Amino acid sequence: MFKLLQVNDIVRIPPDKFDMPLEVVAAEVLRSTYEGMVTREFGAVIAVLNVKVSNVGKIIPGDGGIYHKASFDMLVYIPTIQEVIEGEVIDVTDFGVFVRIGPMDGLIHVSQIIDDFITYDEKRGALIGKETQRVLEKGMMVRARIITVSLSSGQSKSSKIGLTMRQPFLGALNWIEEDIKKLQKK
Image 1: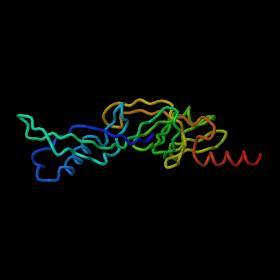
Image 2 (image 1 turned 45 degrees about the vertical axis):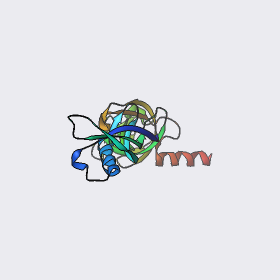
Image 3 (image 1 turned 90 degrees about the vertical axis):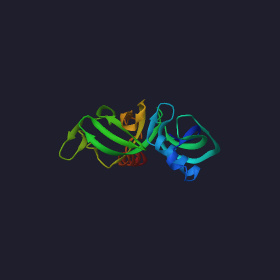
Image 4 (image 1 turned 45 degrees about the horizontal axis):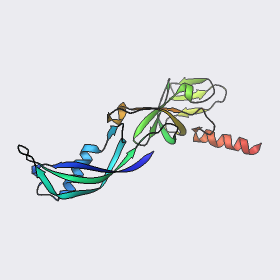
């Protein structure tokens, strides 16, 4: 789930940037500090927006920088259990598929893809259902439900998101369209 959070913090303006406009430097420092970061509280920080900085700063002895109070908005993505997402398959392996969900990737294990026996076609880079002949390969769009979330602080690559498509109206988008057409014919 994407959210826009209002945050207050203290920003250090380095001495070599004193000749630049305060809000421009503060936005630059805050973006380099927060963007791309993942925390358990905020999720993945995508962007820092609307930076407002107090004109009055504090100087700390022994430090050449000036510290200013700042308020800003952060656009974040927080994966939520039971949330239904749509994403692109970015990698297919013998144990499942990786799906891009905004700034993060999730894994759909082969046991969570479809109610069918699945084989991995290494040459094609695809998973194929034995009875249904449904194919899942790189570049396809899928709809899935988040079933597990393990966020670790740092970069988004170390976080783990588990997904499932073994529920009605989840799966590759073309599978869902086929299922809807079958239901309409009945």
